[in-house]
Image (cartoon, rainbow, N blue to C red):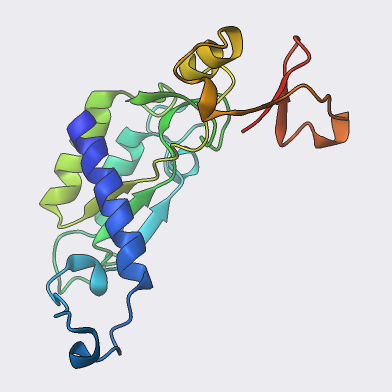
Length: 193
């Protein structure tokens, strides 16, 4: 799983850099030869909010099995097909275990949120996507953690925690109108995440 996540992070970083590149720039002026075989140069990505895509088990929440069952809608693997979107990439919004529906306040970076399925469901999704020529990118948000994340809890309760400097701490209390962007803790400390 870590290997898959690491690859997803590397691809995400490469996509950001690739998206900032400019094909019109002269090769002579830059001295850099552009690699035209990089898949994302002409790739088509389909962003997926798994929670709302397709519910395979009837609990009202989209899941990885549902997405896997509908991969042919995104790309059926036939370049001549008129029955799929023809995307060669899916970009999944966060699927890590999280405290919220959107997934940007991660509690566990190492496992799929149980509401979306299991780690094996994710592995199966990647396998099935690759059979259709679909790359899988996972939105990895290392700069956001939920208040129940073990790193945050360690930083909150132990000033000597190795995670303490991963957060900004202040003794100043905030008003409730700023509560959406600030986590206030009972000790009077607050942390901007």
